[in-house]
Amino acid sequence: MDIIRGLQEAMPGQGVAAMVITPGADLRYVAGYDAKPLERLTALVIPAAGSAFMVAPKLEGHEARSSDFGTAGGEVILWGETEDPFAIVASRILALPGGAVAVDDHMWAERVLRLRALLPDREQMTAGSLLRGRRLVKTDAEIEYLQEAASAIDAVHAQVPSILRPGMTEAQAGAQIADAILKAGHVQVDFVIVASGPNGASPHHSVSDRVMQVGDPVVVDIGGTMPSGYCSDCTRTYVLGEPSPDYQAAYDVLLSAQQQASALVAPGLSCESIDGRAREVMASFALDGAPLAEYFIHRIGHGIGLRATRSRTWCKATCCRSNRGWRSAWSRGSMCRGSTGPASRTSWCARLMVCAP
Image (cartoon, rainbow, N blue to C red; front, side, top):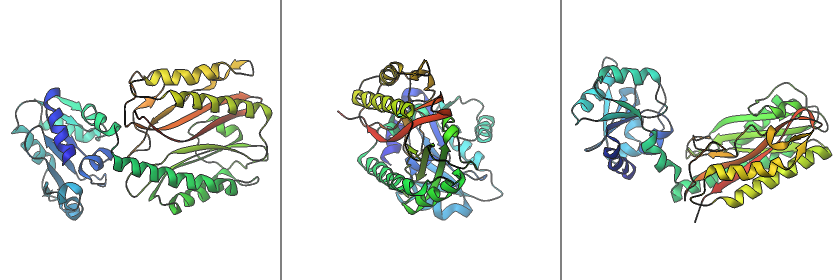
C-alpha cells in the first residue's frame, strides 16, 4: 500500500483525479498481481484521495483477492458476466472531484476508448509520468530479484559454448538454449536469438535453419522472466573457432567503448553524454574505410525490471540524467558489413549497471 499512497501524494500536482491500471507490469508493481490480460476487465483504480479498489471478473476472484493488494485489505469488486465493469469504474470516478484520468501506458486501446466514452468530461493522460519515477529507482528487494535474474541468465550463457557447434542449425541451438533458460530457474522464456554469420547483422533476428559453420561469429541474445516477475536480458558473442583479425579488432574497440562509458556512470550525468563517450571511442576505429560508430545503430543500454526492456534508454537522443538506484541492461554492438563477413555483428551485453553514489 506504500506505493499507492506515494502515487496519491503525487497525483494532485498533475491534476489527476484517478489512475486506472490494467494487467501488465504496472499492475504487478503497484498491486502485486500478475493478472492475465484477458478480454474480461481487471483494473486497479486509485483515486487521488480515499481508498483504491480493484474490479475483477468473478471467475478470477480467488486470484484477485490473493494478490498483495487483496491480502492487504484492499477492496476487490467482483463482477459477473451480465455486469459492465467499465460502468462500475466510471461511476466511482464520476463521484470524485474534478481532474484527469490517468491510464497505464500499455492499456489496450479499446479500453481507453471505452473509458473515454463513459467519462467524456474527464481529460485522459498516461500514467507513466506518475509511475516512471518510482519504477526507475529500485528497492533493495528489487535489486536482489534483478541480481537473481542476472545470475540465472549467466548460468545459461555458461552452457552456450557446449551447445553451439558447426553443423547445427540456429533453430536447433535455440531450442536447447530455451530449455536451459527454464532449467536455470526462469518461469518463462521471453526471447532467444541465435544469429550466426551474416544473420548477426540483424539486431532482432530470431533463429533460422541456417547451418552454423566453422569460423562463424554467433550472437546469442536471450532473456526470461523469473518467479519474482523480474526479467533477465543478456547478449554475448561466440565464435566457432578463431575470430578473424578484423573481427577481433572491432570487438576490442567495442569492449573499450563499453568499459569507458561504464566508468562514467554517476548520478546527475546525462545519458546522452555517456552514450557519446562510447561513440567517440568507436569513431576512432575504421572498418572498411568507415568509422565503426557508423555501424552502431543500436543503443548503449535500456532499463530492465518487470519488463525486459523499459522505456528508458541510454542513447544519443536521451536527455534524461542518471539517478541513484537506476538499474539498466548495458549493451554494446555494431552491425557491420565487410571483411568480417557479408554482414556480421560484434556484440555483448552481460552487465547490470547500478547507478550509485
